[in-house]
Image 1 (cartoon, rainbow, N blue to C red):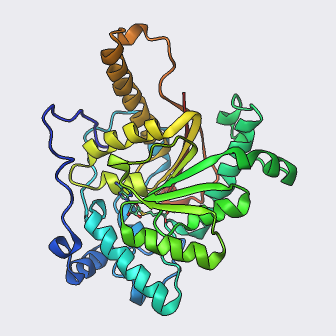
Image 2 (image 1 turned 90 degrees about the vertical axis):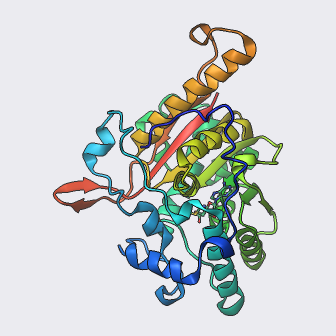
Image 3 (image 1 turned 60 degrees about the horizontal axis):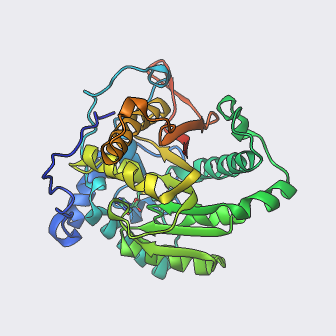
Length: 341
Ligand SMILES: C[S@@+](CC[C@H](N)C(=O)[O-])C[C@H]1O[C@@H](n2cnc3c(N)ncnc32)[C@H](O)[C@@H]1O
C-alpha cells in the first residue's frame, strides 16, 4: 500500500480536475492499454470481448496478485507504491460509460460486472447478513466470521428496510439492484461520471427498480448532505488510488466517507488493489489523522481523547476463491467492513 501523507497546506491538487476524455484518452490509447493489461478475468464479463477496449477490472488488479503471506503481513509497505493508471482519471470512466451506454441502447447490454458476478453475489449476501447481525446487536462476534451465516426471511424483512444505503462510484448500479432484491429499500447510487448514472438509471428502469436514486456526485467533493447507515464501495477506492495524486485522494475519500456515514453506520469496501490487512492499516492511519484534526478543532490533546477512533474494523469476507500462483495461494479480491463510531 502506498504510504499516506497529508496534503501540503496550500495544495491545489483537488482543484486541478482531471481533463476531459477528449483531452486525454483516444480510442487508440485505450486499445493500447487493453493490450498491455491482458490477464483474463476469472469471473467473466457480461460484454463481448470485442466490444471492450479494456477489461479494466483486470487493469485494476494487474500486478497486484496477493499471496497468502501478504494477508498475514503487518509490515509497513510504504515503499510499495501503486502505479498510477488511466483508471484513476474521470476521463477514462466518462469514455468507458459512454461506450457502455451506447452498447445498452444498441444491444441491451448491462455492461461490466466489476470483479464478476460471483464476487458480487458474495458481497451482497455477506453484507445482508452483516447488517442483520448488527441490527440484532451482534457486533461482538463478527470478527469470528458471523457475517457469513444465513439469515431467515423474517429477519431480512424485519431488519433490512431500516438500512439506508449509498453505493459510491456505482457505475452501472447493478450492485444496488442486487441489494434491492435482497430486501434493502432505501438505495442511492452516486458516480462522478454522468454517463454511468445515465446507464444506471436506464438499467434500473428496465429491471423495475424505480425506487433506486442515482445522482452525479464526486465523492471527493460530495454535495450529499444525508447520512447513510450503509456505504458500499466496489472498486471505487481502487480507481481513486490510481490517480497520479492517488495517496492524497484516498485521504480525502476517507474524510468524505466519515461525513456520509451515520454514527454506527457501516462501510463495506471491496478492493482488488489492497488486501484486507492493507485496508485495515490504511484505516488505522486515517483514524490518527481524523483524530488529530478533531483535537486541533477542539484543543483536546489527541492522546487524551476519550472517543473511539472514527472507523472500527468489523469483519471481512473469508470465502473468496483462491488460486495457486508460483506455489503460493492468493485471492484477487478483499471485502472489509468498518463501523463509523
Ligand atoms: C471499478 S469501477 C466500479 C463500478 C461499480 N462500483 C461496480 O462495482 O460495478 C469504479 C467506479 O468509480 C467511479 N469513480 C471513480 N472515482 C470517483 C469519484 N471520485 N467519485 C465518484 N465516482 C468515482 C467510476 O466512475 C467508476 O464507475
